[in-house]
Image (cartoon, rainbow, N blue to C red; front, side, top):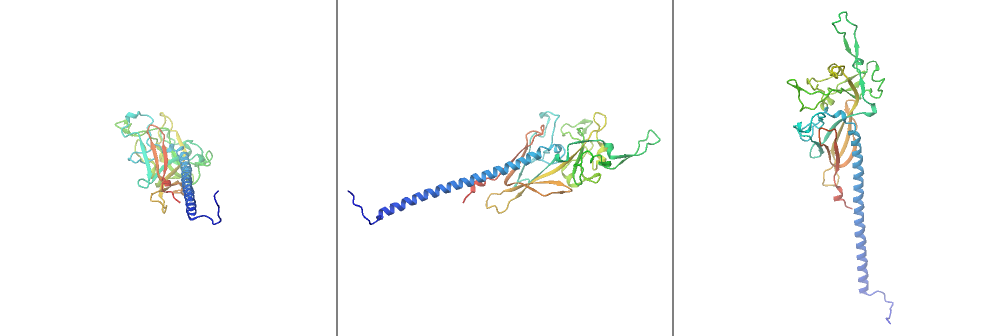
Length: 328
């Protein structure tokens, strides 16, 4: 039988015990560090995923109403081609300038992109009778002489406000166009290499009429597609509107938004990687409004059209991968 004593642990036993405790402690701490790092990584990935999806959801909502941009905005893609060119009436092999359009927002490249959308909150498209905007003078005694027409304003006698109250508010941006699609003529023949467009006028509501805005003109092509004449007023647009099938002109009036997306570099991020905040801002009452933050830690926003024969835009918000440098 082994004799027991009351002298406690020997030195060897004490060293072995301390060693075991140290090993166990090291294993526990290492496990905790690994679990914590994984949790930090998962949390950041989840936050980035939610942030990205919310931003892309807002982009989807905006681009769902982007129809007024096609063939009207002068925004170019990264190669200098018109991003919003749209050819609904020619085969792919007839296009000499390429079918794809790409625009990328990044801190090392372009930092803003502008679209024009229809404003659904103001009501749908209104078919507008040009007679509403004019005061017709007395009939001349000579049947070969036309009566005078004096332009008063698009909302003369409340013709617009009575049908679309939300559309006719001071400072709101409105657009006039037609269903007709025209091209410039070369020796009497339409140039099919140019995208077909309607004449348009975009202005800001002021009283019963509209006023032109030089900031809007920076982005919107208001030149007549056949003659090149700049349609600087609603009056001039209505007088130059093309007829449909040789008959009366069909005029459409709608409320629109100019929306700008832009990147702004983030400072003091604690990372060696450059990253940006993605903002959205709308144009109203002659100025850009208050920016809305869509996402932070953004690397780039990619916008792509795989064919100018289709009205389809793909977009992707890519965020900087900060999980690579995550630490306690």
